[in-house]
Length: 156
Image (tube, rainbow, N blue to C red):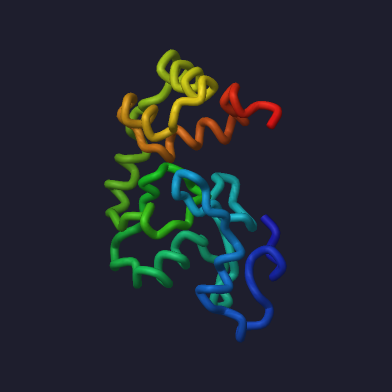
């Protein structure tokens, strides 16, 4: 992982403000704030903050919500490790975070193929999510990772 200030943070400490971080993520249609800078091999955003290399989602959470309670860690409710939206993060125990991460995926095999077909047909992501009992972010993530566009939008 690169560790120079151009990708992880600022060399000039006077420019450290929550507003300056707004240029470091992109707001996705599903509400995720996708980190646009350095990431670790698992996809989590990394940055230099207060002379330390930190997870970007932790820094954004602390700036917008407050300190992460002692003994807790942040769970990505959207299941998107690149997301730094504090509204998509929940402080939980390590055991709970592991339990949630180990749960069986709701969209696998035939169910996933059905969802991908509905995306291609132009269905609203929120309608697909409701029908399959998943979040809109989950559906959008599969769409984005596979580069799928609805047939009606291809070539526009």
